[in-house]
Length: 412
Image (cartoon, rainbow, N blue to C red; front, side, top):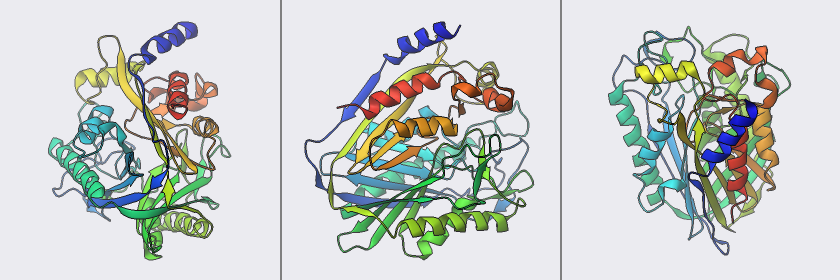
């Protein structure tokens, strides 16, 4: 069985392959940033995350789409961070196709995986068998994200990049399956003007934004709201939060499911990031390298396939039983970036980081797609990870993802 699956992976992996763009020499950097609110304008949204039948009764803070465009004069990439549970590949590619003056493949769309934003996938409606997406809201989300991407591209200006790292403080994130199995690294990329004035800061850390749980009926970006507020109040420019390998199950370590605890976690992480930014590597010129692997993955989850057939989720496998998905490999100066299209378990994220040789390593989870949990070998058929197995498009699909990621990272 396993050998047959591996053979199938190798067959479908070459359908599209890896597309790369690289420049010959480093060039002066240009950076642009933009943001827009995704807070629902009409009431009645179903909240995504945890159980179904969780109607929104208002909002506690705004949720956002935030975009950062980085160019070396030849190659441009746009990194987008959205306060959403996730977006499927067809939706992210529809959004990316609206980018002006940059190849759609160079638009990298991530979601924070917050569990208190409107359902944009379909799994959290009034009941398990009813789609929870407000289609008008989803259309608005796509429009806002596309507009923000183009605004960031239009806002590019000469800039420098600063890279740094920090470590998450105690009592912020932990693994409730295997407590010590986490990636504690907070990776940081800050853009500043030629005069050193901060433009924006990207924070990459792995932990579910789910302090607020089933009892909450308010739209919120959870601890990410307070992390951004802590940093922006200190003068970092706009903050983009990109989640990492949060699967299986990296979650905030809290006393209670309250906004006070969300604030404690967010501000502690923000303070750690601010401390990390005191020691940086700065570049005014750098080579931007980018590769994307696009391929077909066998869709092996019977339950999710049934929901797709019922129209609850719009992620229908093709006739050959696969779905198209993607990974990216990129580099800017001393930093490398890798992505996975779902909720990678920490071992998967750490293995992805081990493929990189840059001084600074960024791992983007829930990037350009949401395939559910991405399991390492020891989690397959392990009762401890029964839930993750049930919510994975392909519990045995990680070897193909790693193969494609290695190819993207090593593309010329």
